[in-house]
Amino acid sequence: MNQRILLIDDDPLVLKSFSRLLQREGYAVLTAASANEAIAAISEKEFDLVLSDIRMPGKNGVEAVAEIQARLLEAGKKDLPIIFITGYSDLSASLKAPFHGEVLQKPVDNERLLFAVRDYL
Ligand SMILES: [Mg+2]
Image 1 (cartoon, protein in one colour):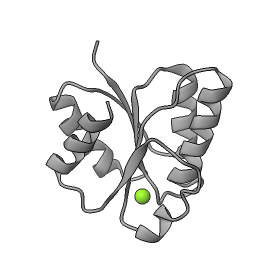
Image 2 (cartoon, protein in one colour; image 1 turned 135 degrees about the vertical axis):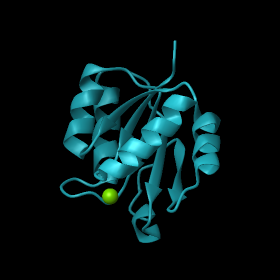
Image 3 (tube, helix red, strand yellow; image 1 turned 90 degrees about the horizontal axis):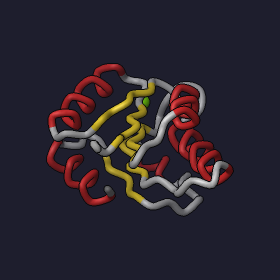
């Protein structure tokens, strides 16, 4: 079965280009345009990895991922690897909770992104 990636970003162009890239590599991708959409998706479907923007209106990516991890824990499911993509290095400092994954700085080229995804899957 294809590995499933939840892709979170408020920018529709980013969702489109990254999901194309990842689908071409054989991953099953579900996109979420906000933290709330992502949290809803996680309670309905299984994923193998989360790829998330940080700066978003409403809840940011760090808050979204914290809530996702809490829900997975509650449901007795295993922690997912997380790759954050951000243009704001200051925000990676707000990642106080330990997580399995990394923070990539924008602009992220395709090879760098695919390398990180392969690394954590
Ligand atoms: Mg954004």
